Length: 219
Image (cartoon, rainbow, N blue to C red; front, side, top):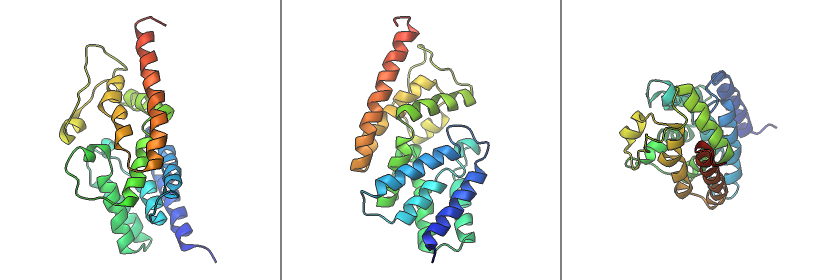
């Protein structure tokens, strides 16, 4: 007999993969795939409901507000509509939607109104995909998509931004390391996430240091 959990996970994977065809390279199906696999890995070291973790990981960026005029309701709404169409238990659906609504970096800049161990796992997996070698690739992919400068020494990073300031920020790709990526190491929730984040953080730091040397013709 097939596992009903495996069934809904498979259907969700298919739904998300089809939905995100042609998406920007840093927020496409393969971003979801990496977060899903990392979340499953971290979940093995935590006491969590793995079905909720996997569903939330798969659906967390089903409609990223950045690509929908800043609308923060469309993602949770799309996820809820899909899960309800599959007759997923209401308590699971509500939990997954709450994770999607509250797990983003920008939402961590404001007052927190929801948390769960499952969200901590998915949040760590998503943040890990924003740092390290993959994170570097994603920064420049999105910066190119937006037409942002790679680096402009006259433009300084905006530190300690509020959620609204962060949403409106449109600086250089290098500044984004200081405005977000270098901050993520200290925002990890799980021990597994913290360990992986340290290695990825160090790699990014070395990269940015080398970038400055090459920018100034020192290397």
